[in-house]
Image (cartoon, rainbow, N blue to C red; front, side):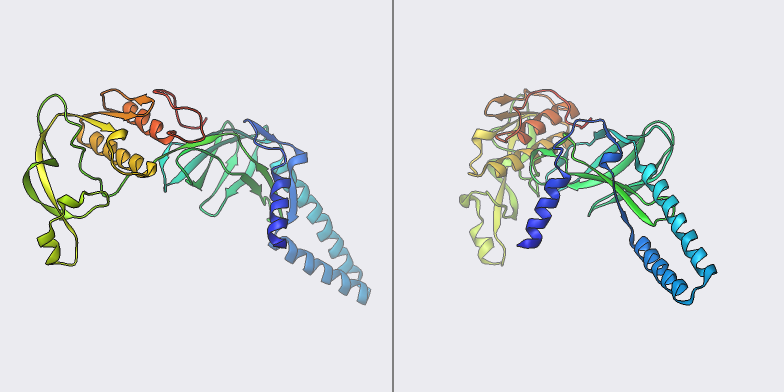
Length: 325
């Protein structure tokens, strides 16, 4: 209980500025300093040397002790100013599907050369030298939910030049990244209500039996091959062929599944499969009609609409760029 309370208070202290609009400049008031593991070891050795010098009244030993103390002060000064006035100019990230890791591209710069500026979390670590122009750091974060996911607190730190001190800063940016719904796997057959304009043979609901396959969640009970199922330890389902149009309709209201996330997951899988087969398709959601088309822009609009469907984020539209920046 006490450690959790302390951790919460500490997080509130680090996040006291709230979410910030980029660019963010890290002035001296935002910089934290502590000895590193090597620095603590150096401090212990230095203290023991000082005690030995005082105990034996050894002037050469004391001179070395004060020389090392002065060296530590210079290193602290250099490490502190190596982080001062570093700027995060922008953060970019491409949309990903739920369950995948998001790659954040941090564009950093400074007025003067900075060395060994690092960022890290539980998933990744990266380092760069800021010499001239914009420099990039990459950081991975988990995708937690579909829709617009806020970027977690970012930590930059450095131990340049000798690693005796760790100097770090925090930033809680206002940016968010778009998370697409997780596609259903394996991808189910295209819906039987989706054929328009022309003929194309697909494996879907029809009248002519074409074979059997393994059962997938959502398959109707009437399609189960009971005789084959009784002879094995698996559940088998009958597959049928029908003549389906070259254009496909993915209608949210036509899906029999009760859970919204399951419906969006299935439509997402259909959209990806339709793009792979280079056929035109249309996505219908309550309040959203994508129109009949295909291509990367059309796919992005459909996936974005499903990402923001009934979420706490702003309403979806047919346009807009989801990448951070």
